[in-house]
Amino acid sequence: MNIIRFISRRYLFSRKHVSLISVLTGISIAGITLGTALLIIVLSVFNGFFDVIRGFLLSFDPDIRVELRVDPVMIYDADLMSEIREHPEVVNLAPYIEGKAMLVTEGNRNDVVTVRGVERGSHIRITELENSVRNGVFDLSIQNNRPGVVIGETLVNRYGISPGDELALLSPTGMRRALTQFSAPRASRFKVRGTYNIQQIIDDDIVYIDLEAAQRLFNMRNEITGFDLQLTDTDRAERVKADLMGILGDDYRVQTWYDLQKPLYDVMYIEKWGSYFILMIIVLVAVLNIIGSLTMIVIQKKKDIGVLIAMGMTPKTIKKIFVSQGIQIGIIGCGIGGTLGVLLSLAQKEYGLVKLTSSFIIDAYPIMISPFDILLVIGGSMLLCLGASWYPAMRASQVEPADAVRGE
Image 1 (tube, one colour):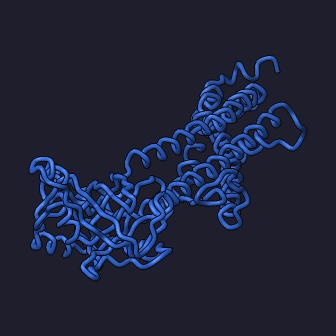
Image 2: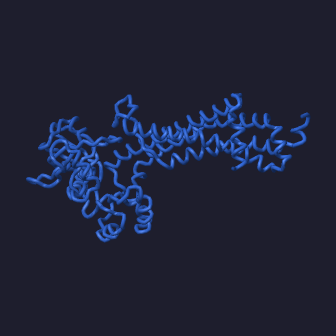
């Protein structure tokens, strides 16, 4: 039998009577249980929202995007593309052209939109786009001397466009040439082949055309804006980014999916860890009760401590007894709270018990349980419990046997 655990358990959970010490101990355990459970649930909810938002953004964003650091366009280098394709983590490489253009519909209604030229066979996230087409097909090929265009339902609802209609796109290059050469601006005409509808976090009117049509529209011969990469595992993007920087050099800017939406992701991380530190205050309040209850035990058991020291127990061992009490309180509170937090999170994930009150892309609070977060919560709570037991343990180890038994 471990004498340290035996004595600490007897001091902490005495069955003789209910005292103020036992009440404070119960409050400490309840506070740690509540704080631990809340922390696990809240962090799991933040993880769930992060996963949902990332999923919607990755419907458009690639795992990695490569562009020139200074120039807006780059030469299409087939040898460089082949070298990057040979990377074991790269599944697909897709060059693209992107720029702003003036969209003109029938009736001379116009709007500035983002035009993205893609290769039909290699475009990243092409499956998501094809599956999101609600009217028509995702077809960018040339038919009857008219290249195809696929537009979002936002433009459809705004201007009443439908598949089969024609529209014109005018690039800044074309408008600048018209001004300098005193001629009518030359617009490229397209036929609408389909409309897509993907729920997205950031509203942006993206018009998809073929890569060669985009080169003609923006007067780019053998040039592209950049190229996107799809990886075997999205979570390995940072590692692949480091490899690509070694291959491409400082002239290129390599951005992961996180870099492309960094302000949004950073805000979500700040909210998550801000909530973690705020909710740890609940655990801290419970830990303050540990200091009070253990200090009262030291005062109450001062005679017993003196006897133990007189019998040969060292101050170091006395200190371990009271540290053990703080650890036991932490283990009980973290054990119950951790189990409760995980069970409630699993119930929310499985059944969607708590619904969202406002209209959103999902109907219930999302949950994603992270083992790292659970370990962090339990580890942080245990460290606070261990720190709370330090002062009472030091006070107990400094008890003088003669003073403890004087007057007995």
